[in-house]
Amino acid sequence: MDILTALPLSLQVTVVLFLGLSFGSFANVCIHRLPRNESVMSPRSRCTTCNTPIAVRDNIPLFSYLLLKGRCRQCAAAIPVRYPVVEAVTALLILSGFVKFGVSWKFAIFCVVGPALVIITAIDIKHKRIPDIIILPGIVFGLAAGSYLVGLKDSSTGLLVGGGTFLLTSEVYYRIRGRVGMGGGDIKFIAAVGALLGWQQVLLVIFLSALAGSLVGLVGLATKKINVMSQIPFGPFLAGGTLVAYFSGERIVYLYVMTVTGGY
Image (cartoon, rainbow, N blue to C red):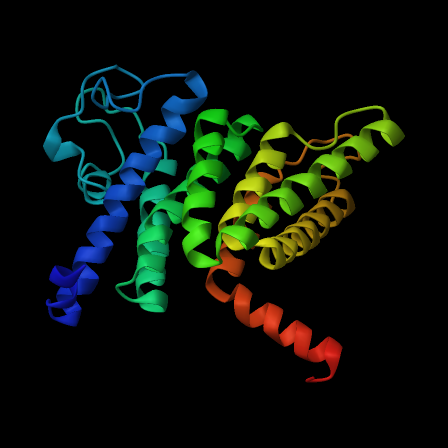
């Protein structure tokens, strides 16, 4: 970290953006391979159409896509737009974390959390599930990082409050409706978030994600894009709520408490 702070600000931003693009490139590997139970370490990246290994010059995050005009050099098949989008979004998230937290342990933790949220969002949207290979290590990481951010007690309580709230909600929904309304991945996801942020902020994440999910659902019903039986992946809403809480959760909770107590 001392090496980064010694650089001029413009160079710091360049390094952070490159770091974010690299994380985004790895996120793409995870998004493609983890749902297929494939290794993210080997073999090297290949064109999903012609299966040709991608040369180093064609595997530079974002820039290679632009230089190749979105097509494979060998077979000219279109490269899914998801690849540059994930890389760009991840880079912007990492840059936002750097601007917000500076060179700090909270920024270092976000360099893991940010890309993980992107991976979870993309996989849940496409496959409507969150693989255990992501979320179970996430719970362990959440406890470790949360012990630093909010303390071990709040981290452990957050895990129980988050996971317990969703588990209870899922059980009640099943008994009333006779079908599963919330996947196990969502339950483990919110448990990991609770471990990371503590019990107060995990309640904020639950509120924000439920609000956003409800609004999207109502719009979908009104426009007839979905019906009451449609399955809407909840992971993206949890990821969005987690981002808000990680960046501004303490401030929001503080303002809420001050409002409720009248400033006392």
